Length: 280
Ligand SMILES: C[S@@+](CC[C@H](N)C(=O)[O-])C[C@H]1O[C@@H](n2cnc3c(N)ncnc32)[C@H](O)[C@@H]1O
View 1 (cartoon, protein in one colour):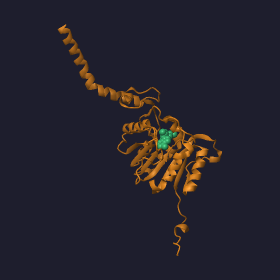
View 2 (cartoon, protein in one colour):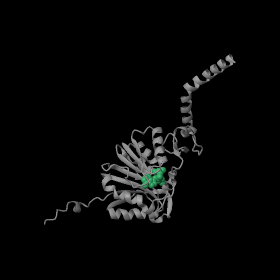
View 3 (cartoon, rainbow, N blue to C red):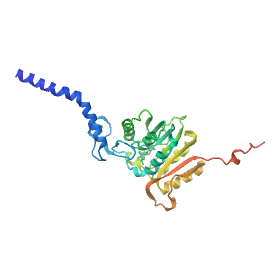
View 4 (cartoon, helix red, strand yellow):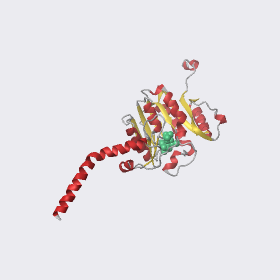
């Protein structure tokens, strides 16, 4: 019996040492294999062990050399942002810039901005899984030192609720919820923005959070939401520039990819800017 116990102990040591030494390497190797695999809805066992929210799928995205993780309840439909990502890619104006992304989901757009040379990105979302997802993807792509992901409290889901009063950005981007409706679950926040409250709050804080030459790129795939942007821009005196060659009036009520609209401060006409102060 004694010999049997000693034999068991020796076997355990012989197995445990290599597993201990090589275990980490094997896990890393599995992770690499996982990253390279085609998009799948099969959950990743390693991610599930170390993360509060399980990975639902891995997706390959053009321009990224590894797959992106997308966690349970987090939005994934890259068709929404095709035009916006193209604009980010071809734009050399992101070099050294500060960016705020409102409603980051998996972090896809924020990562595109960092890849395009942005200096720092603040990414917000109401969904805790989206925040963990964005942090996770930023670690995978080695951008975590330049990306600050912040959870927006559901009690105050406005555009700048987790932005400090003095914080300003060169670029604000968003692929926000498009439909005017009330979200009932955290997953429904990807779709619904009640009375376009989030969109309104973007405009209300722009003066305070946009740098003087800053701009906003928003993408929408619904004509009613784009009409709401036009109204808000008029009210708040911002200029709208369509960054899309499609004719809005020719588009159906809902469409893909999202239509990119640039919002920026109205440039004063030279005459208006040089107007003398009224004399009393
Ligand atoms: C259509 S998804 C876009 C996600 C990601 N940007 C993308 O394009 O893949 C909209 C995102 O906005 C988030 N969201 C909704 N309301 C929000 C709010 N008030 N503040 C911050 N994020 C919000 C949702 O949770 C969701 O992740």
